[in-house]
Figure 1 (cartoon, rainbow, N blue to C red):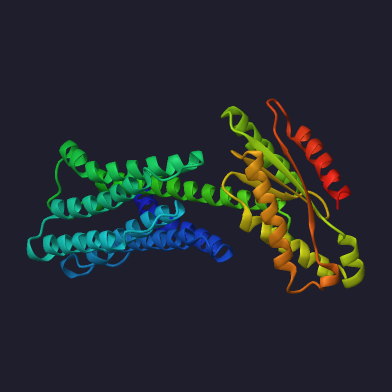
Figure 2: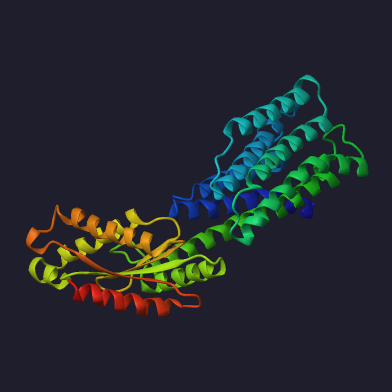
Length: 375
């Protein structure tokens, strides 16, 4: 009896704990909507098992309806959480139709044509179809991390488990015509144990996803210059070196643009650092608006910036440089007095075969010095 009570309380307790954990995470990371969906999903898991195993029995086994509907809604919400983790839209119409079809089948085989095996098949197949739809949708989604592949295969495993388990178990141990002894049967024990395992695995996978997102955010913050919105020097060197290596590996051209805001000290001295900060922020906006695909931009010093352009020849690099120069003048015209209108000097160089980022910086700096000298 003690073991049976423990098994009966296992899934409700796990559901409450996991729902609480995901609710806590969602309250601290509201932009990750899949955390809220996971919290709701595990809450319905707990509710379903509580009604099924712990709650009072109702006449005509009517308590089976809310318990199994809770399982269907849990599958809906947890599948939606996985889809949103991948940034995919949730097929609400399909999911709702499956839940309604499962509920209708459950009610029919409970009230109109009572059959316990039929009810088991209806609910299991409905949940299996929900996870099959989910696995199909995320199969072609981008999976940058190992945990993303694990989530896909976990959805496949859950779908297979629900679609095949009833037939295999009933063939092995026999069918169940009534609920007499069902709560103590090998089938129900397998349901509870497998549910606990899959719930834990899915929860861990989603939590690892949250951790990876947080690590990515922290890394991005550590590599971003908050004033300009571009990469800082550390971030630029890391991303630019990687882009340069990819360009070299693909025999693509690359150019480095180094820019320096002219007379920047005069702006700070005459109008204060607030004005200087606004000029830097504006220049960052100009660079982002001008960038094409395959470009890496960063603020590498006080008023110094760099842009690595791949798949670009010198002519096109000069076009980008001229656009940046002209856009800065127009962008600053509304808030900087004409007597100290910001301008920018730019040095350009093309990458030679085997040249490192350090080599490009040295050549671009020389070109920038010549631009400064020429006024």
